[in-house]
Length: 317
Length: 317
Image (cartoon, rainbow over the protein chains, first blue to last red):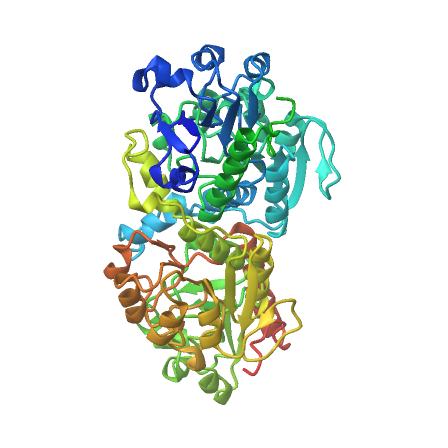
C-alpha cells in the first residue's frame, strides 16, 4: 500500500504524475483541506506537499495531528510558519537550487526583453505599423548592454546564476546581500547603494519578514528615471503600489516581473503599461526544472516515510 | 562650406543629426534620388550614405559621375554591387563590428523569448487568463537552457558574441562557417550537420549570393520538431516560404526573427503564429550602437573628403 500524501496547493496534474506513481495523493486542489476531506481523513495525514508561497500556519497543521513532513515543491518556503512547524516537530523540506538555472534564465529574459522593448517591437511588426512606416516613440533606440550596470539583490544560487549570465553581455555587475560572498562582483553595502548604482536592479533575494517591501518608494527613487527593476523572487519584496506609482510618474524606465503581491493577480494598473513585461510566476517552469523539483520532493517524502531525516531540509527549520 | 553627401536610404532624422553637423546632407528619404533631385544636383554628388541592405547598382552610380565613396550605415553591404563600384573606382565603406554587441544581444533576447514562450506568457497575465486559472497549452513547461544545443551559423564578430552570451546559460555551443576559427566551440563541417545537431539555430552569417536561402526546407527538416531558428542577419538567408510552411506543419518549434525577405514587411502568414517573436530589424538599434555606427560613417566621409583611404573600407571592395 502506498503512503498517503496531502497536496495542499493547487498544482497542475502533470506536475504530480511522477509523484503519484509513488504515493497515494490526496489532492485538495488548492482549497482548504477541511472543505475537501473529512476530519478523520486529515487526521491520518503524515506528509504534505505545498507550494512554498502558500500560507500554511499552525492552525492548519493542528488539523493534521500526525503531520511530520511539509515538503515544498520549489525553492521557496516563505508561506510556511517555520516556528509553528518546529514547535510541532514537523520537518520542512524544499527543492534547493533545483530551479535556479530556470529562474535565472527567466530573470535575464525579462531584463533583455524590457530594456530592448521586445513586446512593443513585436507588436509594431504584427499590427502593421512597421510596414506602414508609422513612427512610434516606443521604438526609439534604447541603451544597450555593454557597460550597463546590473545590480543583483541576493547572492544565493539564483543570484549567482543571474550574475554569471548578465556578465556575458559585457555589463558591470554588483550585488548586495546580507553577507559578502566569494564572487567576482563588486559588493555594495546596502540595497539603497545598489539601487543608486544600478541601471537594472535584479531581485533575487529570499522572501521573508526581513525583505518584505524592501524595494519601496525610496529604493525606486534611487534606481531613477533610466532604471529598470526585475523581480523573479517573490512579490512581497516589492511594494507594488510604489512600483505602480513610479511607473505612472515615469520615475523609473520599466519593469520585468514574474511575481506579484497577490498571485495569480497582477494589478490592472500594472498590465496597462507598455514598458513592463509580465509573466505568470513561471520562473522554475521548465521541463528539467520540474523534473529536478519532483526529484527533491520524492527524495524528501521517501526519506520521511523511511524514518530518515529529509535530504533537502530547510536550514534552521 | 560643408561637403555635400547624399542620403540614399530612408533613415530617421535622429540618426543623421551628428552627421548633419559635419556635412551638407541631401536627403532622398528613401526615394529614387532622380525623383527628388535635379540631374545637375546629382552630378555634383561625390559621396553617399546608404543602408547596406538597400539595392544600389551600376545604373544608379552612373547618375552620379563624380561619386567616389559609398558609405554604408551598419555592418552589412549586401545591397551594394561591389563589382560595379570597383569598376567605377568608387570606394565602399561600412561600420564593421560597431553594432555587433547590440545585434548579438537581440539574437539572445529572441532565443530566450521564443523558447520560453515570453509573449504568450505576458498575454496570459494581461488578458486575465492567469487570474481566471484558465489553462493554456502555450503555458506548458518548455525545455530550459542548461544542456541545450545552440548552433551558430557564421563566426564573425556577431557570431562570436552570440556564442559567448549563450554559453553563459550553461548551453552547449557549436558552429559552422566557411572556415574554422580559434574559438572554444565545436566546429561542424556543414550547415546541414549544424542544423541536425542544434536545438536552436542562430543565423549570424554575412548575407550574399553564397548564403541566399541557405536555410531551406531541408535545413529546417534537419532542425526538427523541437528546434528553433533565430535570424538577426538578413532575411535572404532563410527561404521564408519554407519557414512559414515548417511553422504551419509544426515541423519546427518556433522562430525569432529580426529580418525578413522583403522589409519592412513580415508576411501575414508569419505574424499569425503564437510561437514566433518578430522584431522590426532593430538588431543594431541601441543608443551606443548608433553612436558607434555614426562614428564610422563620419570617419569614412572625413577621410574620403581629405583624399585618404576609407578607415572602415569593405574588404575586397
